[in-house]
Image (cartoon, rainbow, N blue to C red; front, side):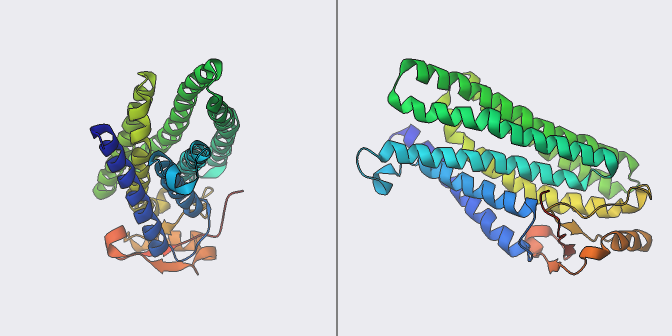
Length: 308
């Protein structure tokens, strides 16, 4: 095993470990299994495992001679679909914490439409060219190389758009908050999103520099790290949303979140009463989160809404 193969083994091994750890954390954290956030996390983690296995070159074990390359292509392609689009829906479902009212519903609708359109415009043609390249035709291989760069840029724009909307809306929450701790946490959340965007930028840069092998070696690991960041963002952001509930206009009360969990925070009694009233319809789904996953004990409420 040369150095490149060793690095590939380590990166994909770490990606699989992170994904399996995420599976365990999800099932230990949620008591009610449903909603876009829950399922998109699992789908994205499943995709990371498949994508990494494909690059582990397990074709010799999974298939006989003549079919091995096809099996690898299937593993990588299915893993890529679920990993990338699953991550997009994780980012999309998180927006429910910072968007509300008519404007929020419009943004959620159009961002979801963007994700679905990218599936058609980016996933489908890339997949066709991927399997067509097995014929080793020069024109097909060249077309795949071009489409690979287009889809990398396209998905980068998609995730950057979702993260930028989150950062913008979180900043508005920060500007309204009078609590020093909330402002500090929001700054940390924005920093985490900036790191995520930087990692995506690095992957695109590697692709544009035609460092394809290095880009694919790091891709699964980067996506697994981004998903682990999601639990940090979730734990902190829902606390801020609860603490800022009373600052929202009366005509735009916080709606039950779509496929994500809300949290009761240790704010003043007025805030707690307002938040409890807003979430009364979903108060039956209470669960306790392990301290190591979410910090000090808090009561979580898992709403019943899913993807509509």
